[in-house]
Length: 289
Ligand code: NAP
Image (cartoon, rainbow, N blue to C red; front, side):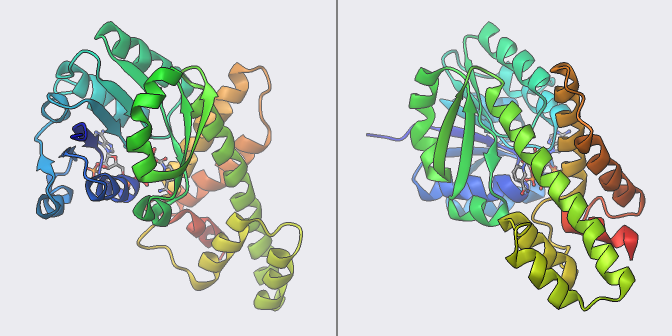
């Protein structure tokens, strides 16, 4: 049976790998990126380049968005040339960007008013997992819509967890990244203490990474902090600041008022002020050097 046509919006670090996986799996693909140059290389792989999200969505059964933040998502879905202005009734929207729960719920309502369903389907994993089709999707929304979308998600990921109603995927993604952000902020302070004290850095980090604090994240990020490998970024530092901002707001909404998310955010904001916002998030340590 012919595979359904998919529109893919946002060909950044993550989206470019994901779109290539869909092409490799044989899905006909319309692609759109705000800066058109990023879309050009996909032509050779058989993608149809669209000049707006609206045009990309016009003949698609599924529309995937993988853009920076709430503002970008609002623009590509609801802007003048947004995908929801061109979408067919019955199409399924797959929003994989890391966004606020509030915005995702508004977007789901806008989709419903046009006869479409929205799955919030953010991902864990980074650039390498996007390129190899090994992302993990955390999904909120109607289970029947998820079943229809499953073949497309399976082309991009190795795990799909359905959490519950609209917004639950986004909420867990924010919780996931909040835990990651706090770990990275603590690690940056730990590396600074090691370096300022003049301890042997390789030995000290060996103890930390092989001991109880040595999560896969701490292992990977401490390596990049050591060799100062910040470009090309796996995950832009400013995007983690965005995730911590959204996570802290969610915590407030739940009357929990997180202490550690704002504390970690402060370090990421200082890193942005230091000029490291466009680097990999491991550059958070540079403010202490
Ligand atoms: P990225 O490389 O910065 O790409 C961002 C994408 O959003 C680009 O296609 C960009 O278009 C587009 N964009 C930004 N503002 C826009 C606007 N106002 N209108 C239209 N398009 C806009 O980011 P990424 O690393 O791929 O991340 C994408 C999403 O996935 C983010 O929500 C991020 O938090 C999340 N995420 C990232 C990772 C990771 O490890 N990188 C992992 C999991 C989840 P241009 O090319 O024109 O700028």
